[in-house]
Image 1 (spheres, rainbow, N blue to C red):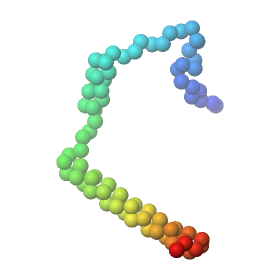
Image 2: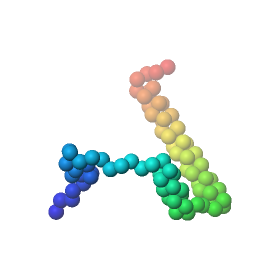
Image 3: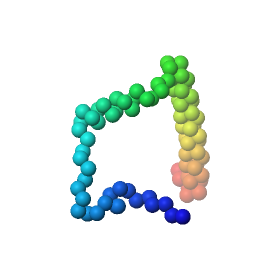
Image 4: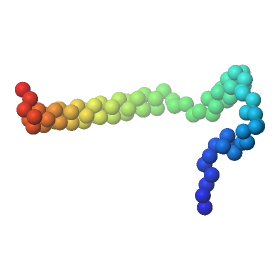
Length: 82
């Protein structure tokens, strides 16, 4: 069974007009309503998450730097760099 994944515009005949645009005031109210649904982290959670991300980034920088140095050395040995 195939699922139709085309957007709404594909189903609309070319003669129909687009729906009316959202006003800036309504758009702002919708943004505020969505932000109220967000579960914001506590300060302790935020600090923990930040430390975890920084440690992960430092580990990845170390891995990439090590691989870069390894590949650089290998290429220089193969192609006889000075």
